[in-house]
Image 1 (cartoon, rainbow, N blue to C red):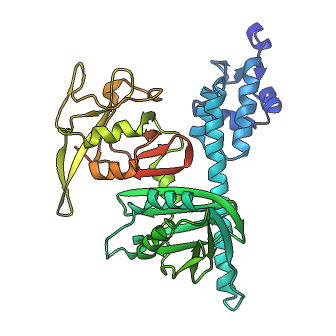
Image 2: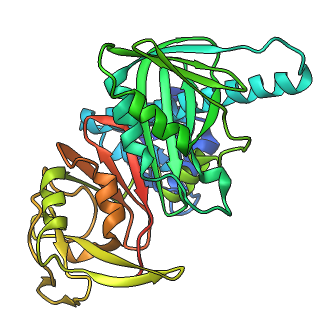
Image 3: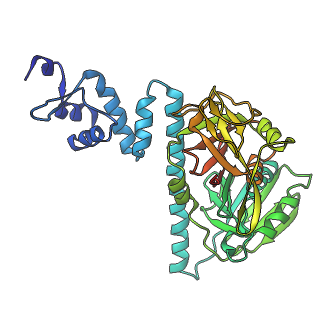
Length: 384
């Protein structure tokens, strides 16, 4: 052992100190997550410093709770920025909770298949009337209208232990919203037809009650507001596994997270002379706009008909961002096109701070509310 190595920890010593196995330490070295301080050029043996013990313990803890590799790497890079790490932990905890709720719903469905004569179990919820109305508004635009895909012609209602999640998609965009509330009963889901969703939205405009009472059973959903009930029969289809789609389309750690003012972007998108190009899809022509970054890494509209010049992205100013973009690359690194109408739908009323998340010009992009991680829309980009 050399003098330098005598001041270092061997891979076995770090394994014992951190709770990681030797094979795991080798894996995280090969993955570029936790590289040793020194590798013996002859034997290939790995050596670590005392300062690497705490990072290794962090990796071990994240590994035990099933954090994906990209998330572990991100947490390690930002371990001196607690707010960023807490954001990653919160997002992973939501994934774990979603997975548990999914498992409970599936087990409930399996039990009903095994014993169809079993007494029908209902789940009762008490939700804020205005919050439920806002959630319906946040997803209604994404309901599919293709008669050949009836499974997309409704809104998925997923009851969770502490609230309900609404989901809709037409293949080109997907919207998710959540309402917290009091829940009595097991997790259950129902696919409400769009006509019933529209009737529900009208019912939620009634004054005289702060809350909406919801009863979900396998064969019906009843919502009561101010003493007036509405009963709907769920559609007999299995809604697509949207969580799997989200994991496949949107990575755990997006390349770009760009805060922006929703009202400013809506104003820019609806202003006279906004630069657009036209693209046809399935025989229907759509207006397409393009988003890019300015020299400060803040969001702006750019000309979808323009070209990237040496000095930057050709385009027009019109949207002021927030804290700037988190991600690699300069202003020219991002230029993504999207259906103008779809983007306006995803913005909703356009009030408040929103966050745009994406990985590149041909990857799906997510529009999220800065104050509610459960509410977001995913849009497919348009190739220019």
